[in-house]
Image (cartoon, rainbow, N blue to C red; front, side, top):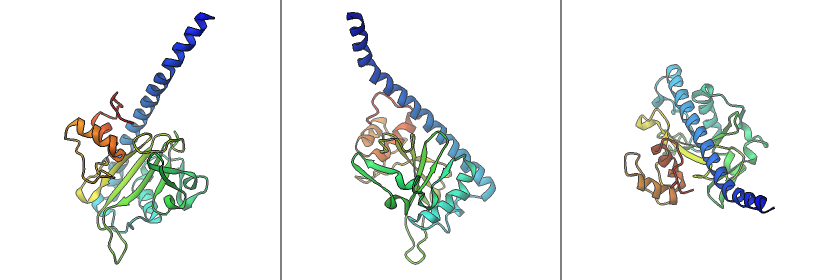
Length: 229
């Protein structure tokens, strides 16, 4: 009984740490797979559709219908998905919550009017929304910026930036023909830089989880011991 008790205590002490390490490895693998797949999709799309700076001419600002049309043609046509959440499918986008920070979440109609959602075979998910300026007369974007959020485990909680959701950016008008980290600090303004100091990326991730993708990209999509979330 004493031996069994000791084994139980040791298991209780080590199991959470082991589980945490396995979860980090799984997130890391999915982030690497996503980064590779979407960059390959962009490369293939360029071959079929020409240079990306001409892709955004009819893209409406914060309009999910327009963005679905764009994603279907230019990106998802070159990626393998199992569910397209267009038309506010009640068992798809309507049941998904997106949290910028813990206890700061939204979903349902507030999410489906502006964002697009796609689900992959492993349960991971893309949530995207247009950024940049807007033409007051046409409603079209005046620059091509997309915030592309990758949820490593889809519907499973916590559905929170920096924890299981990681934000990336495509900025076509600056010739970013690939996905890079979302370096815009969502709460305090300003930006972080992949070419800067790592300690600045750690600090930014602690206070502005939208920038955590920059820290992960800097570290090769590995969760180091000092990763703050």
